[in-house]
Every structure is written in C-alpha cells, then in structure tokens.
Amino acid sequence: MSTNILVSRRLSDNFSPLSEQAIRELSAILIRKELKKNQVYLEEGGVHSHIIYIDDGLLRFYYFRKKKEITVHFGEGNSFAICDESFFKQNRSHLTVTALEDTVVYELPREAFLKLVEQYPEFETFYRRILEKLLLESRSKISSFRHENAQERYISLMRDRPGLLNRVRLDYIASYLLMTKETLSRIRSGLFASSN
Image (cartoon, rainbow, N blue to C red):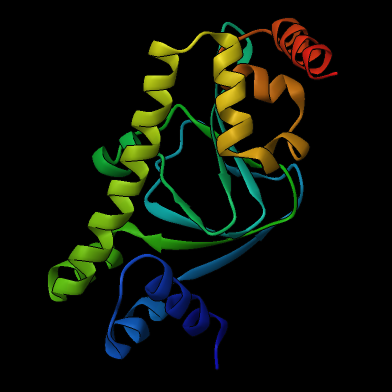
C-alpha cells in the first residue's frame, strides 16, 4: 500500500472522515517532501499555492522586520499549515518557512485540492475543518497577545505546547512570544526560582 494512501487514511481518521474513493483521490494529489534540518522550505516572495500537512518534524514560519526575524508560527507533526494570505490571494508571501529538524511534509496543491472540494461534498467538510482548526489556533494566539502579559504568554506556551520548548531555540521562542531573548530569560529564571 502506498505511503500516500496511508497518510490519506490518517488524515481521514484524524481530521474528517472520507470515503475510500475520496481517500484515493486525496492520495493521488499529495506531494511528499523530505526536508533536512535548517533547510528553507518556502522563501519570502514566493507564491504559496498549497496546504501543508506536516507529517513529522517541525517547521518555523517567520518574516523579517528591521533586519530581525519575527516568528509567527511553529508547525509540528500531525498538523496543517498554510501561508494564508498568499494561499488565498495567490500573491507573494512575506513569510519564510524553514525546517527546524528533519521534517516530512505532504503538500495539497491548491488547484487540485479545490477541484476535489467542488467534486465531493466530504472534501468541503474536510477543507472547512482544516480552516477552522487553523483559524482557532490563530485567534488563540492573537487573544493571548491582547490579554496576557509576557510571563502569562510563556506559561500558556508551556501549558499548550510543552514539547516545543525543548525543540526550539530560545531566540525563536522569544520572537514568537513578542519579547526579547533577555526578557524570556528573566521570565524563565523567575519561574525556576519560584518553583524551588
């Protein structure tokens, strides 16, 4: 049995049930890519025309502002990601995506996937669930920035994504949480001291 079929079945099981015919259709459009640690997957200025399913590994989504890298998202295994504005409008993206460790992704090409959405009602549900999940993740992060101070944001990250902290450099975590590396170090020291 092909890897694409197995991945399509897993997507059906984990995100939205698909019929056997739909699983075969999905497997036919999936494009598998293996990325090495630190490999740039998508470059700023490119048009991102696919939904990304991260099968295994870790991706970092970031942009440059005043010669600094600002991390906006970490995509972990068994999750979807898109460079949304570029994907929907088909314009140039301001994001760069890099593998932080050896990573396997499956691409769902935009045009081929949208044809499946038009042909099969179950793909419409599948697509909606992917977008809902991505939207809720984004809204949660925005809410955190509006309502939590720096320490609370770090505690939320520890609670919601504990495995991330051991896999990602502190300067990337700091930029993701919209703070300096020094502020993050002070927060971590304070939390460590208060727990002893």
